[in-house]
Amino acid sequence: MIIIEIIIKAKNLCKSYSCEGVQNHVLRNIDLEIHKGVFTVIMGSSGSGKSTLLYNLSGMDLPTSGQVSFGGRRIDNIKEKELAIFRRSEVGFVFQQIHLVSNLSIYENITVPGYLLKRYPRKEIEKRAMALLESIGIKELKTRLPSQVSGGQQQRAAIGRALINEPNLLFADEPTGALNSKVGREILNILTEVNKSGQSILMVTHDVKAAVRADRIIFLHDGQIEGEINLEKYMPDSELSREKQVLSWLTSKGW
Ligand SMILES: Nc1ncnc2c1ncn2[C@@H]1O[C@H](COP(=O)(O)OP(=O)(O)O)[C@@H](O)[C@H]1O
Ligand SMILES: [Mg+2]
Image (cartoon, rainbow, N blue to C red):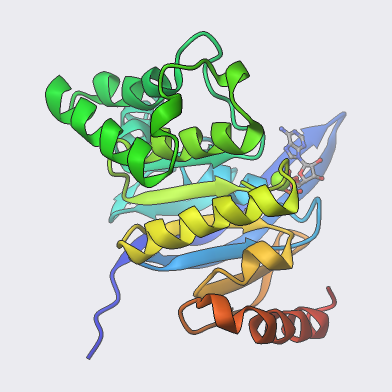
């Protein structure tokens, strides 16, 4: 029997924004579980609420109503200071717009979250950073500033930074959205490898090429979950048939 370990459980999650007295219901009664070890993707068209969902599941934002538990602990009703500590220790986040610190080197960008959390001694953090630089293929760029490397290399560094504290879950919001398709593919290869080594991932995308990397795809439409599909583990030689399978499923969902 396979035991499924739950990382996130969202119940009745709602998020709305009010603008000049008008309520915009962006997330509507989301019930969702995210499982350990799994590469989960949330797909949906632009404006369907994907980023908002990611922010509410990762403690970067708070829901209007409903519950979010992360590792069995409620994060929808805790104080901002506790939430900040939670994020630093449990969550890794990769953004479309990368957001490295411009006056820190690639190496420093990766190590600083480790120094801030202080889970491990400095020596251990430095060792981990070097191993990450090696595995994500940017070891020789470690002393450069973000502006001195390419967009794809910056995104590699951002993945290293997100992984330095061994997060329970790696969140990625359209991580290939600002990259060309070749470089995007390299980033997806890294995420696939990171997942194979056991890291749980929750990624948002509206790109089928990115979505096919997932074990599980959840379809979001107008702030509601419209269905999901479970796939075999990704293998490069199955990519084309996978794309077909996912596209035909998406089409049936009104993609
Ligand atoms: N901070 C905010 N204030 C007001 N409206 C917002 C805010 N963030 C998102 N929205 C609205 O929520 C909807 C979904 O946005 P978003 O989650 O960014 O969608 P996606 O990531 O799927 O493109 C959009 O209509 C957007 O305008
Ligand atoms: Mg978005």
